[in-house]
Length: 213
Image (cartoon, rainbow, N blue to C red; front, top):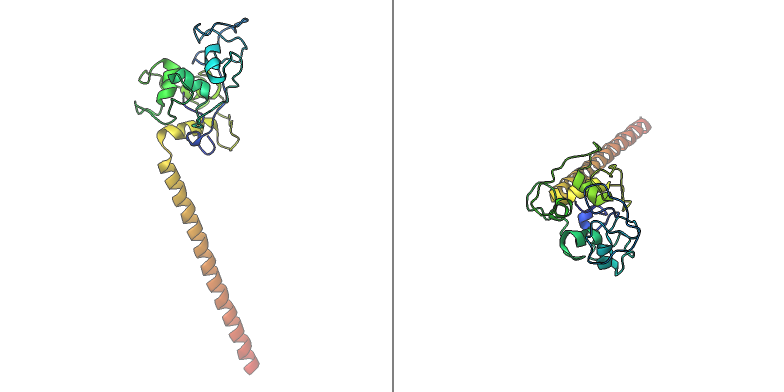
């Protein structure tokens, strides 16, 4: 799963909402607290879909994590980093060893290694790849594509994709377009000013000519 995506972009330091840990839909919630040594995929005393063992690493207790913690401000929620590589600061939001636009940490969480195959499949045909859906809300099919956790007007799914495929070219293109538009506007204003000045000059000349006659 990729980080979700980000003020302008997730890779710039935006975290996303918490959710279950696996790509499958979450199972029944445990009604009792579980020991820290128990399998992280099956123990969730407070029913927030973050395993108790992971919450202990993030917040020091089995029920203390909110799912929004991001201690290193890299855009990857702490609970995701803990599951991906063991600590709250270990994952990179952009590293993609396979080069298929699925970040390593997302692949690790979704299917168990940095090179396993998850595909960019879209389970519910809403335009959000399953790995991105896992990061946004915890399962492979829960995201709608409209989530915008950081409220910047850009959907989390778009931000996630931009972080992995690289935003330099996109940013460069955007800057070029903006500069071009500004230059065109400036040129238009200059031309309009010249034409207006010429019209005033001709009008003044006509008035002077009429007065002289």
